[in-house]
Image (cartoon, rainbow, N blue to C red; front, side):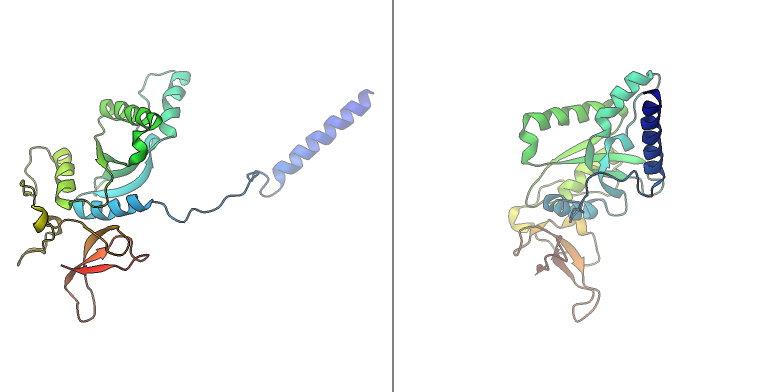
Length: 236
């Protein structure tokens, strides 16, 4: 009887060892598929505007895990540290701006769509704000929209990153609706004085681009931020 039990145990141990030595023995039990896009349509549209709003003043990262920019306070025991870490390890911020020189974390941006109206989402948003504020990480919330005024986004960001410095003066007066499509004036290439346009083909926001070749080389035009999926263009 004892010999039979020992034999069963020995066989079990051998099977476990064989599984561990087998290439890919730790492979997941279920397969996965690749998602087609990292960002949603709304996020891709806003990303195009964000690149205009910050220019070369910041690096833009998207879908950054909160635990990669925040960490529990020192002095916690192992149990409390893990309890503090778990919530931030399961959440991410939509966009993160970092210093272009040393990649220091500067500003987190949340793009609030309709889902942020749910109770669970509001609870998550409140937690994120309460985590970021005492840690010294500014959090900017921007309501998702079909179109944005680039100068407004830029002003909101600079008010946080460069408070009271007056760096890169901006127009303070809101632009009339009839004047939102403004081409750069002679002698200036400040694209931030232009406002976002909605693409006439897909409805995504349009961004200012410059033709690099052909008859229109050097000329500025509106191009869809969903390019190359959408090739909508519009003259300035």
